[in-house]
Image (cartoon, rainbow, N blue to C red; front, side, top):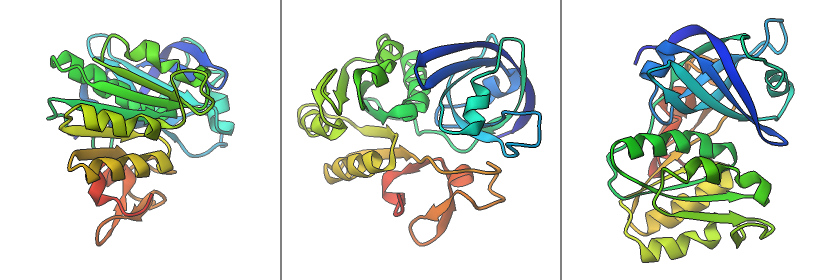
Length: 257
């Protein structure tokens, strides 16, 4: 797939909660090519520091308008700088990068937490456009983390919510609800993105039921093009580059979380 470097124009930035933002930008070439599960590498500063671009999963596109939607969380200097970006500012963006999700499922379940729900949102939109309404199970620490429910509500058939403190939905992690869903409903594929311990637990439970499972790994990435090896991890019989061979893998291909 062709990769582009675009000077993307920021057209909006919205507060989702105290530490999470949505950023929309015009990048028509990337918007035309991107598929669910891919990411972009964003240069957050024109200065020498921070030097490296930051990888952000694509949360959605508007191909007609050439708009790419990103959702990110404040985790360090680079994302804090990104939080100061205003309408009309331009960001150098490389993408679309990596391999996306297999979208052949007819009865899918999406399971996510944190900003892992961003690429799954793009996947849900793509499925809805194809006439398939997936189920979604999302987890957060508190109710404030589950602002995602409003983004998903018109795209999915069923929605399950869990919070660590019980402030919304079922108390506990997504594993408090997943076994029940897998017993009650026949899914032909489960798609997972979020914290590594969650993905490991979910994929193990899903594979035990004989259901196909895809995971989108989150790793530190420097170049995003497979050259620096900073995101490499152990697969079956070989090292894989998450940015180039992934970030989406079939769950049974992953041996290092």
